[in-house]
Length: 141
Image (cartoon, rainbow, N blue to C red; front, side):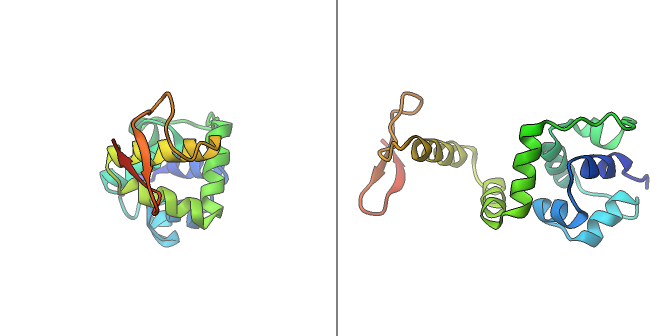
């Protein structure tokens, strides 16, 4: 197996420890080390998660020699670091990874409404989202 040198370069450029990145994708520190050193090969779903975290293609992650040209997106980097350090964000991302696309759209609309102070959930982007009383759970109307 080839070493995944790009993985290590991206991990370091984004400021993650092996443990932090492993937590984001659901593996341990030792597994991350084995990935980076070519002792174990991640499955395609794990590779997709890693590529998504770094906002790169699978090809960029596993093939291309990137040298020291890695330039992280500062917004994505700050979000990734916050996720790695905050258990609430980590839990949110882990739940989102297991969710259906429609559930993600509803959750996104709910969070956007809460951030705007619009607790009824209706907006010009999603006028059909409302909340049932008293549980405040989302439902489509």
